[in-house]
Length: 115
Length: 112
Image (cartoon, rainbow over all chains, first blue to last red; front, side, top):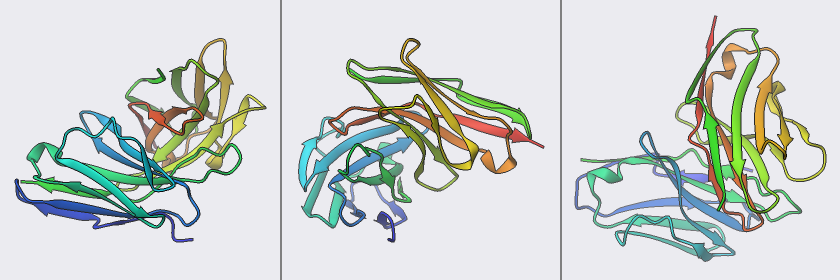
């Protein structure tokens, strides 16, 4: 299996532009998570899905952030409009619902820089 | 609410020395506990996990951790550090809702 795939790996954009981050989870995994990692705040859970349905979006910082999962093999995290404080590494992770596994498999991340 | 505290944002050991990374958790229900490792410019990888059963859990790369309910701890150890162990380590707690809370991370430095 290829693991969790994220694209792009690096994104540089100007303040006010729309940014879309993409994720392909591991096939057969029922859960998908979006995280943001910064030096100041560490690893923060933004939102997670179960069977394509958002379960908890309490970590989404504000209305400029939105996430969708139109099918089991694809999810997007959109920021519109972007701001410099959104600069961070964004990780997608997926998890199987098999027995009592609960562990998460992380993608390589997207490093976002907003100037 | 669940929470995780990792004691020490940086730990430095000599190659061949014992590695001890500390983690304490708070959970109102029986927790699921994890240690993840992150190498530079990579995502997190699972080192080991505790869900039920034996409280001493062995993971990859010679690491192990012991779940101590009375101390609400899940410290990570490795008898002999290797240069390749230099990375950031995250302790995490989860429950059956699948929502996982990560600690702030501990960066491990290994000196030659």
